[in-house]
Length: 88
Length: 282
Image 1 (cartoon, rainbow over the protein chains, first blue to last red):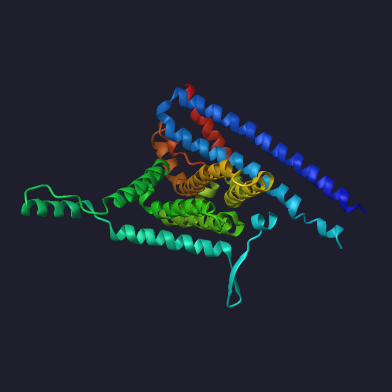
Image 2 (image 1 turned 120 degrees about the vertical axis):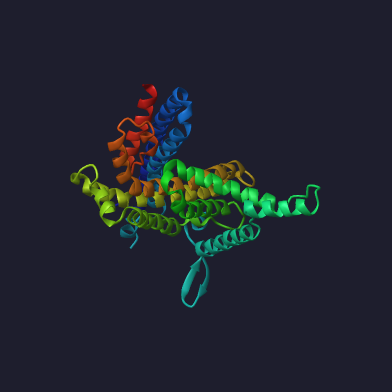
């Protein structure tokens, strides 16, 4: 039986590692998307509206990955469903 | 901290039904938007009206008369509506008239709902997952509604088999997953913004979260835009996939096809971004 201190420490460390990875990787992806969009914008300024719209949609898609990580981490930190097996 | 950021407090109880803070705030926003629309409609003047009035006035006395009142309000309203219409026409040029009421309402409502969180004592309703899930379900249903209404049952259902019948399960999964993603995105953004402001308030003290609240304004605008434009793209994807195929068969080398292509999942969107960069490098 794992005691509650170990459980809390482990879940906190896991949440911090999870959120740092989950923010860093989408940040790289967003940077690539933005740099490509700026390349396209510099070559074809007249296609600005289409590029910006597609960029925003793509950024929203990438961003939602980071948001998923945030939601999972918040659940792990505040509403961990495994907690009730420990506290009986 | 946790209770005020994550929990939804109950505003009042009426006949055994718990009315949460979210619902009460939503009603307030609905009342506000409805009043705005009513006032704007009351002050509205069509061009023919004002021209006829001006002509009759100039006929009565030849000196040029002053402008009619409420012109400023009407200009503001017209600017908002024109912006919404031009944004919709850049995605779905043939269906601006059908889509403007729904998409415009989504934009205005989510914008107000996101910004309400800045008023002290109020929380934005979009920080509650039930509210964003309800909005996403509305978008999910309206995709089918507009698709069936404009294309008809047969053509609409055929678009699930569109590239090849093998992709039918993936199309169905993307229908569900994008709806969940739509709701979780808005919820996560607004909730995390409020939590960040609260955390900084706890750690740093009074007036410290002001920069974060400025970020809140930008984020509220961007998230409202993204929610609306994604709903628009999903609806247009349901409507246009059929017409796009016809257009492509007629004109294979159409440069506008990049603009009109409305992808309906993430991988296709990545592909279309790629397409834009490719076409620019050629």
